[in-house]
Length: 360
Ligand code: ATP
Image (cartoon, rainbow, N blue to C red; front, side):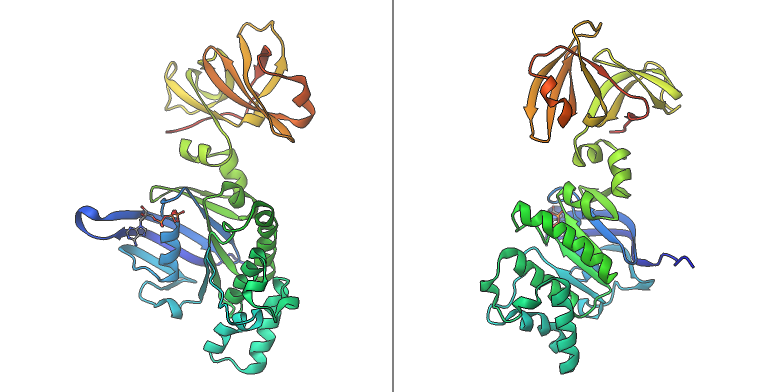
């Protein structure tokens, strides 16, 4: 039988204002979202957009200014942090330096008054989950950054929270380790079935790990969706630019409807669906990903286009092509990289169904 999806967290019309009067800051404006049980949910946005604020409201470290918060269907606004079945892993995870790995993880369980055998069993279980059981006797200063982060994770998982909040937990690690930890975190979430709410400003991190993502800008949720749907159908120009690389090309609407047509300032014509609230000859902005545009070498095209910048990336190349002063970004797959160089004259093709009209 198919299990019904339970709501782990409901954020309803939540506003958070810090301070009062002239110096007040609205960190979150009328936020609404529902996070499912067992979900890996990511809050993604640039520095200062309000994602940590939302996490701290869920944890109970900050008071809500307006709105409601529910955890598994129950109001939690008036519940103190230690009464919420939630744990948090911070970017700076501050392990106790004088305690070994085992004792660091067991610490929370001792405070909860668990008996010895339960403490031993749970601590060993989570240390095994994060592959740190061999290091249980070491002190934090005898561990690498990645190992310390795993201990911090084990410590947060040991009391078996229903929800784990993670505030940029990988950002202090170097790139290789960060990439490895992404996979480990995702596996850990799947194995434990705990709802993870993960905060990051790193779009790649969000795309690789999340079941769903909420993109936030200036305290407002811009879009909520699965990574693929946000990447393919960004709700607006902010999301298009923040996630991956995007072309936002200006043009004029030539035909509306399912088989609509736009003439770009470059002179190229793109077939795409154009909603009927747009009128013929209206200026519009088109969104298309750089890897969707097809490029060929040719000097015979009516629309003069040339490579104004060629950047070799190892596994691909990034090109900037100029046509009638409009710059168009293109990603070339590895097998085509050697066919092109700076200043080459080229023709471009915009395959149907990969471009969208996009709002400001
Ligand atoms: P970062 O990625 O840099 O941590 P963020 O997206 O997590 O940023 P928040 O920390 O939630 O952003 O901050 C949102 C806004 O609220 C910012 O303008 C910030 O300066 C402000 N802010 C956060 N905490 C406080 C506070 N305690 N008092 C006043 N303003 C605050």
